[in-house]
Length: 102
Image (cartoon, rainbow, N blue to C red; front, side, top):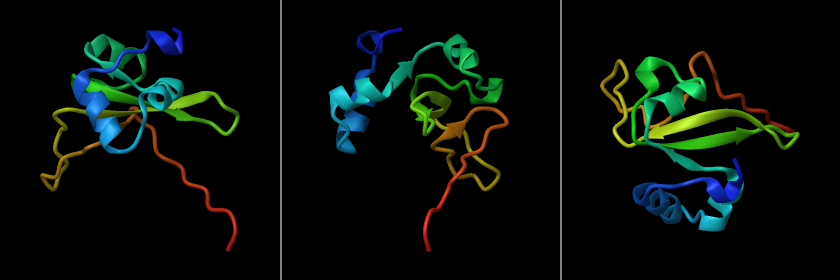
């Protein structure tokens, strides 16, 4: 799929613009809206995570390839403390952080 073919729902475009992400940057980074559960399943999200509509956010590796995806559903599920899970990682995935320097 070409970057030009990626689609964003209006609410996701507004969300990104409110966070100073220009349309061309969102397109270049590969942000897109998911409107079907099958799309999220194909990306590796589990059944409980397949909440639509949702903004899918690619996680890029240092080598410039898409390593994984993060999901921001419009209606997030609640965690054990009844707080919304605004972002979802693929089932079994975790975010790795690397700190360089002191």
